[in-house]
Structures are given as C-alpha cells and as structure tokens.
Length: 535
Image 1 (cartoon, rainbow, N blue to C red):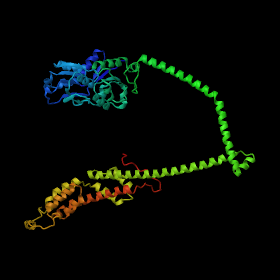
Image 2: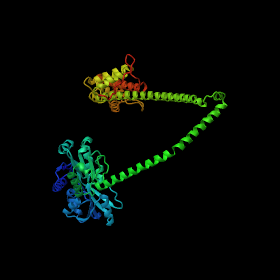
Image 3: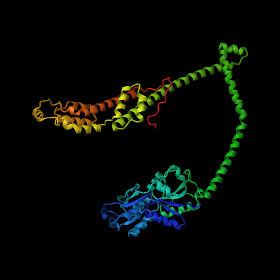
Image 4: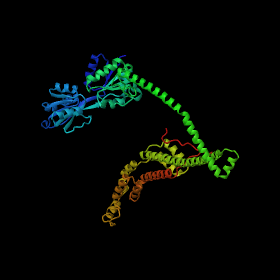
C-alpha cells in the first residue's frame, strides 16, 4: 500500500516539495499551516559585518531591497535550500551547513569571521554564538493559516506528514486530537523539529540531514513500503510507543542474541536449583538444631519459674507459654490499630470540615460575583438556601432580594452623576433668593484644618471618589448631608440596598469559615450536598 504525502510547509516551499515528491512517484497533498509575509526592517550598516548567516530561504525571498546592501558579504547557509535561494539572488555562498545553525556558527568562527549579520524570521531558535557578534533583523514572519476542520478534510485515512520547522510540529499537535494521531506518520527535518510534535503518532522519524532531499528520501521509503512494513527495518523510525526499531539485519542479530541469553539463563537456573537441592538437608538439620536449642532455652527459663517447672515435671511441653505471649502481642497490636483508626477518624473529620468551609466559600464568592456584575443568581440561589438558609436566613433573603433587583457599583456612580447638580442645590427646585443666600453663606467659612469641607460641591466630589474606591456606605453618608438630598431619595435607597447586600455577603462568608455544618434531612440522615460547580 502506497501512502499519500501530506505537505504542511508554507508556499512557495510547499509547491517545490510537492513537485519533487511527484517526481518520486508519490501523491502529494498540500495544506500549509502558515503563510509567510515580509516585515519592515531597518538595515544596519553593512560595513560593520564580515559575513551573513542564512537559516531560511524566506529571509532572501522577503528581505527586500535592504538585503541587497549585503550582497558583497560571504553567505553561510544552514541548508542547501537557503543556499540555492541566496545564489539565485546574486549572493556568494561561502559554505553550506549540514546539521543546523550551531554547526554553521562553528564554520563561521573557523573561517576567522567575528561579526555576522543574520536576517531571520520572527520565530527563531536560540543559538550559542560563542565568540561571535551576531546582529539579527526580523525580515519576515509566518502567520498561522488553516484550521482543524480544514486539516481533517484534507487529511486522508492514513498518510505521511512532512514537518519542516519546530513551530509546524507544535501547530500540528494542536490541530490533530490525540485519538486521531495514529493515522499520521511524521517525517521531520531534524530531531529537534520532531520533538516539538509530541507523542501519540502512528510513527515519528527524523531525517539524517536537515534538507528537503533527505526528508523526501525517508518519506518515499515510508510511503511506498506502507506503515506496517516500515515498522520493520528502518534505522531512524520511532515506533508506535516512540521506541527506536532497528534494521532487519540488526533485528535478526538481536533476536539471536536474546535467544542465546534466555537459554543460558535457563541452564544457569537449573544448575542453581540443583546446587540448592544438594544442600537442602544440611540446612534443614541446622534449622532444626536451632529450634531445638531455642526450645531448650525456653525450658530452662520455665524451670526457673514455678509454674513452668511443674508443667515440665508433669510431662507437658514447655512451649505452652508461647500462645500466651502471642495473645499479649496480638492484644497490643489490636490496641495500636484502634489508636491509629482513631487518629484517622480525627483527621477525616478535620478534612470534612475544611471541605465544607471551602464549599461554603465557593457559594459565597459566586453569589458576590453575581451581585457585582448584576447577573441573576440562577442555581446559586438554591445553594444559598441549602447551605445557609437555617444558620443565616435574613442574610440569604437579603442577597436573593438584591439579586432580583440588582444594583451595581457602576449603577450608583452613573446615578450620582445624573443627580449631582440637584444634590448641591442647583436644581430647578431652588429659587433665586435661595441661590443668593447660599452663595453669601459660602463667602466666608471657618473650619479646622483637619475637618473636611462642607461645601456641597466638595461633598459631591468626595462621594464620587468614595464610590470609585468601593466605599458605598461613606458615599451615602456624604450624599445624605447635602442640601439637595431630597432629590436623591431613589439613589440613596439603591445605595442602602447595595450596602445591605454586601453586608449579608460578608456575613455568610464569615459563617462559611466559622460554622462548617453538615446538612441533615428531617429524619436525621445526612444529605449529600451537591457541588456548587455541578450543572
């Protein structure tokens, strides 16, 4: 069975890989997980550098006109694809790496260069520059494309998938559920890329060299042999449980060596058994002699005691004292177990109390959150009645009533802004004579430095600041002392309801901590309290 090849790299690399795969007789399916876009970048002074390091052909494709400033510098490419792209744009290729960016850095250092320019993508792997000075500029970025549904539609029942980058491996792992991974066999550009894809795949393997040719060669072998045949005989494939499987010849030698070892172990076991049987009689005699000596010692001790001596003279065995000692030890063991069970019960009761406290606090916090956002209590109302209905009936009723006509802090702030003019005595209800008397009365005001100003405007400002800080009770006190407080009766009533609801919430939170009670039915049986998080 020939498996199809799923290509996930972005364009134009996906089309290039697909064309090479079709030349090798494979059926290629392209579903890019990313789209590559250029980024605006500022070019550093070319005179500050001695070489260029390329880790992707996209840097050349999307570098733009700024990259032409560095055409006179030698290029050290991490792979043949990057080198071909740079050569096509007129760059001079000094060396092509075969095993990653770190190997290219070592080549650059060996050539005597110290300052390197690295045009790269936004997502890049860290490297160890050693003694080199590397200046990076982001010239392109890979934007996610496609989704899980599109990938599932494009993916056949079983296929081989090519992974060209660590980010592609991570994205594939997020798009494919664990239950669906068995039908995909991964072929990655390197072991580091393969590691990012996670586990659970039908098989997973890394190419011997980090280039498209080695990747396609390995994928061709897997596609044409089929997944079942490929499990036997590939040196780099990782099996269904991610364990390395050897080649056929090596497998034969491993089986032969294992059979020889099993045979030697079997013969050694027979020899050891025979040796033990030949010495079993002597060991038994020594053990019997030890037991006899022990019994003799017990007889001697018994002869010292009057009761044991009489038993020995009467012909009774001296080891009758052993059952008595055994009964005492058993009683001590039972007492120890009872003490341990008692301690476990105490700990279980303490844990039950802590669980009841936690459940009560969860219910209280959920009720507070609902009131703060102006939402309905929903199932929380039943939980409040069940948990705190008997201990704090008034607090529960206050919270439920407040939830039916919710008042939030934002409502109080907006209402205070609306009636602010009337509260300070400048509303339509004030006549011109009252305005004159108020203004004249405020011309000169004597008060202590530590006493807040009694001017209505300043009281209003203080009330607004107190509301912003969440102190609705202090804001209500300020409003109640303002000259136009008669026009703010509705607002003051809303504020009182808000304050009473919060006090009730504080009360049931305190009750949840101090009074963790277990609910009981009318017949006295314990009621299993449902979790507040249950639907």
